[in-house]
Image (tube, rainbow over all chains, first blue to last red; front, side):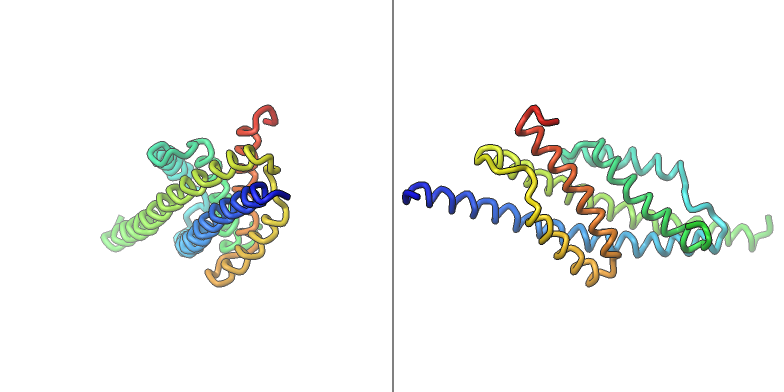
Length: 105
Length: 105
């Protein structure tokens, strides 16, 4: 490999490593945020079970979707992706809530 | 409704609103974090297309999964959920990368 080509390959590799290092930092932040979110939804789960409230709340979900779609536009994120993301999270939360309630796994 | 019952219903409602307000704050943080993550992965996509690198990188994904599972344990989050979450995100990223490359939608 010529010196020029070697340098380019190394630069490509370094650039990719730089991007990946930022992605890894963001992923750590996401994981810690998600952990905190589930800590709260777990409390909500116990609360709903205690007060005999249903695990899912469609009107609340509708509000959340509308809000996240709006936020996504401000953040220049695809609103459809955000909706899919919220759906992914809520499914997990409802699964937890049903487990807390027991028997409805 | 007796005063006691009314108070309890109001307290229940307020407690739920308090939890939801924290969830909404965390969701806003997640959306902005995800937007930033996709800004970087978009750069990676263009970079990979330019340098003729494949959209997916299995060894990188394996490293990411191992790292996020470890982080999840520290954050008291279900590592299986984190793996599903990363998979969800990576699928979207690869879909974007293919779109950047063109024709492979």
